[in-house]
Length: 183
Image (cartoon, rainbow, N blue to C red; front, side, top):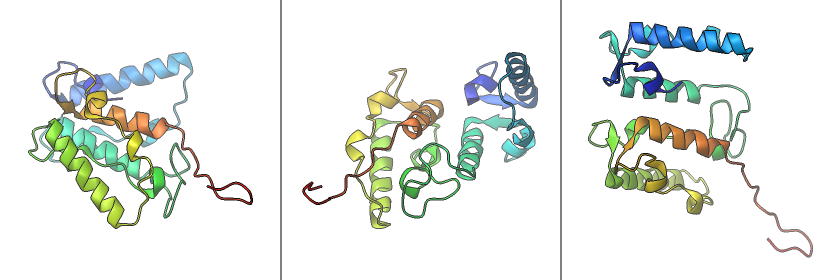
């Protein structure tokens, strides 16, 4: 579930009441439809997400915990096991998906086109220095493609949605040279 699904009154924060109501409704719907519920016992409690203990979950707290949990997942999910150093919780080509906060230079919870470009450039630089191949840069989504509502800014939900979509993309293996077939 995304942050906006928990933020019932759209005030930008989630109270414990909103959190519990949304989670209960989600569980009831999944139970009624016979959907798998194997991860429910391990779902974080409100207090796990409310990192500063102020009784409210902000979009940033939600995104941080979600990114941390995505990074700690075990198993071979989409994009895992694809490259050097890949293991549990690793994304495509053995790296973690970047956190929204690493792009949000001014901390306002929104990414301008400049912040997005600078954040992406910094990540590319770091990953390149770490020796990761940069084969799929041409396929990286443009700012406008991530800004789903066209307001000229990327919010956390749009950022996470783009990451999830990217993780579901099939990985095209590199062609290897073989006798009579150059790479």
